[in-house]
Amino acid sequence: MSTTPPPLAAYQWPPSTNELAERVGLAPDQMLRFDGNVPPQAPATARPATIAKALADVNEYDRGRYAPLREDIAKYHGVEANQIVLGAGSDELIVLCARIFASGGTIATVPSNSYSMYRFAAGMAGATVIEDPSKADLVFVCRPNNPTGELPDIPSVPGQLVIDEAYADYAGVSAIDQVESGVIVLRTFSKAFGLAGARVGYSISTPQLADAMAARLAPLSVSTLSAALARAALASPPDVTAQIAERERLSVALSELGLTPLKSFTNFLYIPMDDPEAVVNGLLPYGIVVRAFAGALRISVRDELDDNRLLEALAAWQQGTPPSAVPTIFRRATAETSIAIRLRIPGEGRVFVDTGQGFYDHMLQQLAFHSGMDLRLEGVGDHETGDHHTVEDMMRAFGDAFSASLGDRKGIARYGESRVPMDEALAHAVVDLSGRPTATISITPDPGMATHALESFVQTAKITLHVTATGQNAHHVSEAAFKAVGRALAEALRRDGGLIRSTKGSL
Image 1: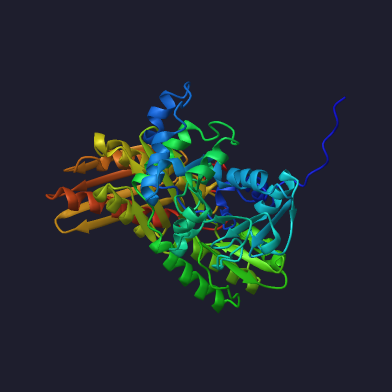
Image 2: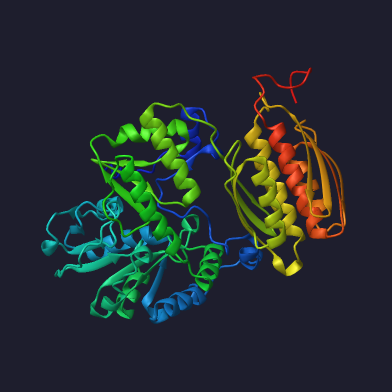
């Protein structure tokens, strides 16, 4: 007769973005999550073309235990492939280590306030978490530590030592040189590499320990698609310099708001305080998600644009100011391109566009700046086939985000017009935020994709746009046209009461 297993406390994930957005009456794409300790964007290598071959062969098993990926990881760290064991994120390997090495029933963590997965893994293994590492069968050292961000010393202990280096890229340190003495090092592609959703982790150990772990691991727990993404990411390793600098800037800015973080060696900041839940709940209506711990708040470091939004929300909440316009976050992925957008209307003309298409990146920068938006658009495309796919998808994605930001288009002026000269070139643009996509565009001479770029924007933005631009220099003509469209949009986006500017009552 079967018996019901005893209850076990499950790992607690934070609520979904959809659930949090519904709680405060926002759209999911208006929420920014500062609670996951992941980069603000996926790596440039994470695009459909990267997994095309793996997807075509998805009906097959990988019969070599992902030897190419293990070899790439070994080369990256200067070890041998037989020292690498793959897992579905480092979490799977944490659970595996608990099952293998806590045979005596005791596990300790360093520091004691550390990653909750260790305690969860102990429960799955039937082990007990104790305070004294010198008396434990298995010791997890989270280095740098989550959630505090500190860099603990590595203790000398009689039990098996596992050093979790999920955030080591941000600290510039590693204990891989201690592997030969029996230490197991855990790494992940979820943090600096930006592949949390792919679920790829790995251990580095002696070949003997690697064999013992691999023999007790479920076969092929990593998918072929995830393996392809991980290999591509290794071929272009992350540079975390900018995020480290942003961490220090954010730390100073938070201190100026009365929230003083501990020194961090990670991509997050840990702020001791009496009532962190009050901050978590207070920031939700602003579309900001941070995480509370017992006696502290943890905030992930994203990039300057996102972090500034966090700082603005914190200042507004402290002053009791209601939320202002919340930016729209939009992503578009096709077989050829991957585009990510953060857009706020109205904004202050803070614009950054980077898709690798220099000229058309510049054109969109001009349009967004002159319309007074805040725009950050980043993406990659199949440069092998030219600029068409990337430029088209960039503008279509921008149009989608623009339309989403306008909502029901209530309270805007609707119509706008502008004339812009640029040296010998002259452009005239008239726009109607009509909800109906209509483009009548003449750019002479056209540098190649200018007309099609604006037409692509019109289709997804659901606007009517008339543009005439002429001159001698194609660059001047195109730039004048994009500036004119931007300035016409600025006029059309002007707040004009609370009505929808249509006798029909809707656009």
